[in-house]
Image (tube, rainbow, N blue to C red; front, side, top):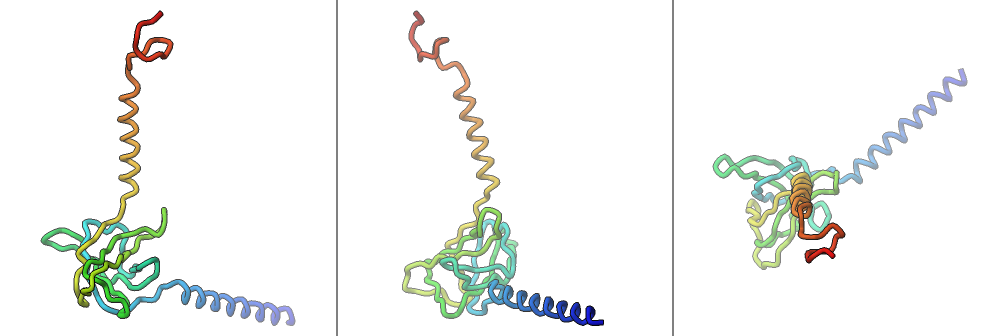
Length: 169
């Protein structure tokens, strides 16, 4: 009987610690949605950006991506997002899709401009840059090295001893 009581108390302690850990992790994970002014940005591509994703400025979460759609007339991706009301974006601000690391997720990064005029809530950020496609860059690197290797592999006018050009003695 005493053994059952000890096991029950130990199980309750484990559950309390697990709940405390989950609350701590949730409060420190920046999972909260940021309410504020809504803005729009248009991109050619938005690979990996989803509603609920982060909007960051200088590496700090300042907003939340509310929705992503495609413009049926121009076929560009339209990202609706919110930014904390305390942050006023200059009209020459830019938005780019950035990566949290080599294998990390994507987020919307805002780079503030220097203009004195501010974008009105509901306005559009005109300067955008889509994500860098790592697969395409690796492919270009591989194929450019293969193409340059073909140029070096032929007869370059050297003799059998490796001396460039000129008559053999």
